[in-house]
Length: 402
Image (cartoon, rainbow, N blue to C red; front, side):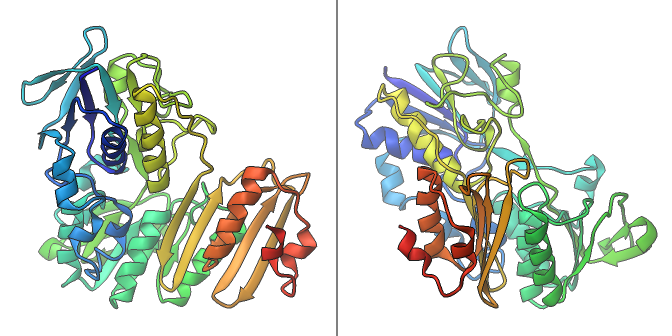
């Protein structure tokens, strides 16, 4: 094997290249990227980089000299337009054709815009890449009234960043609570209180929104019963769409994302996928987190080299909002949850535990409790039976449960 092609150049692609080289692969690695910026992480875009507390360079996964040592053959900015799985080649928008021995699809996801027309408005933004971040940060310098459409994690992070800069912020969420797909009603209520206490207005059940441009490039939102409200800019944080089109056109096995086995291998033996675009083999759906992108890519890269490495990591993600570091371990599964335990150790520290019928941890949300998350990872991995009374007892040291 002397030629590996990777489509995508984000977190998953970067760690795949790092793993391939670290495990002795000395053949060609071709990376196709639709942007000039490569191998960087995205979570700080909505927080430290958007607020300009951290430079863009802080996003880089690896030092520049290390990337040079990877000896990647770059195709950027360029776009993969077709995968020919029979002839094992990738066709690019530039007209190039890249043959491969192994292919990794790491195309990730893109920002979802509910109404296509909104993308044509000057002061309507999404936040997915470095260029988006630059544009929005520039807008934040003069904007005073900002609307965020979407009450999921990205929307809440952007809202917190804007509010910390003293902006007037209103969130419009079509559902009945915040982050409803990933957390319980108790956590949704906590998030709502957190943002409202900071001065953000939250509009739930905002199902019928229409946008229009008015004087001086301002954006007017017609929010039905709430009436018409004018903003300097609108940020759409309404979730993501999985970039799976290449796999669909190549007739790979695709559902919400690309179906892969525990080694990252798709329905074609020489085509792999990792990150947002690949379905988590243990859960059956896509996980959008940097930890998943990194670790699934490492597993897939090793497996491409013949070192079969199963990926079954427990989902873990985090979010920084105001003074709170919020970590989510496991997945929200109300159908399996028998008991909820809330442990509040301090006004700015609390944890939510979700237990099954055998008192085993299914899911945990921890606010400013990083050490406890590390311990809970062991509980989940070992299917540890827990005592709900101990979890709730503030006088009991949970570290004794190691």
